[in-house]
Length: 485
Image 1 (cartoon, rainbow, N blue to C red):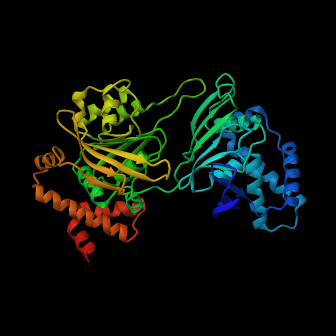
Image 2: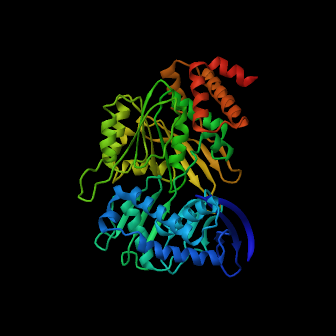
């Protein structure tokens, strides 16, 4: 084994060590997770406490299946664990007791070692394929890794799936062997049961990013250049609708949230998502809305379409949609654009041409004549070998529904380069704002100065960026004077 990387983090009160190693007999790196604070003797005592815990905490079927009793059950487990720790380990410190309580809670009430993996901020995905294979994880720098964590049998995977389902009021059984759910933390979970997944029960957890990724983070990480970010800021300021597209896990929603920080503070924004991933500055007039799945009786569902239609009655200036998937959603959004609303949304497509094809063919099938309602298409890209994300293309949609690629990623130099002149974007801005071409370029230069200043001064939280952008709109001269100093 060759050690590639080592780091530490906390899972609750539990200190965790991760060693990433290379094995000459394996084709992928190994993610070794360990809890160095627990000795073999302590582990034996903790297993004894776990066995006694099951006898002490008597739960009925109604308790287990009622999502409203989660806190009650958690507190019952916690108080019993503390009682048993005092009984078997009376001399431990309060700090050690808290640490062991968290450890036992995770093993007895939660998802065990899965929760430890979920606490690693460097992981994007945690995947269980079956009980015979180790758990796999997707590391945001190193890609897919095998862990040294195994689940003892298929029944335990099924138990964890049921536990996740109960937390959101859903069930997974042999009759309903598929589960797709969003946890309260924002993490997205998919689970399947054998024999639908023929090699065993599976769980796939896509972690929700704890820290909101901002436009400054993206500039620092090379996702977008300052000049390109200035172009998007200018377009958003003057209410041009944008569509952000890309493949799976390319960062579409993160980028959508990042550019939404360019909204003026005196306009009303309605966002519609399945899970609230977008976070906007507190200075904005923002109403976030999320969908709701049907209950066990099949009632109470609130769809994306319901919320989009409802948002049009809320006098929005800007409408932000997590993802367009269906024809009715797309038609409603294009209708919103035609009635004077600025719309910002994401769509699965790998380049501009594919975006146009997806929009104008089944199942979305929007009439081609409506496409010019979109001013810009921004395409995201992820290199699967290295994990880096980049803006792949920025294109304008022309009045005849064709497209013109303005900026294209040069893979060799890893830079977004201008390849054609604007045929619609700049002329339209000149027409609708009364600004000359020279004044628009001056606008871009000023925005570039502000962005460069934010990068240089490490201003990268959502609210900090929102404050600077808000100041730009209400007191641009003073801000530029300050930035130039």
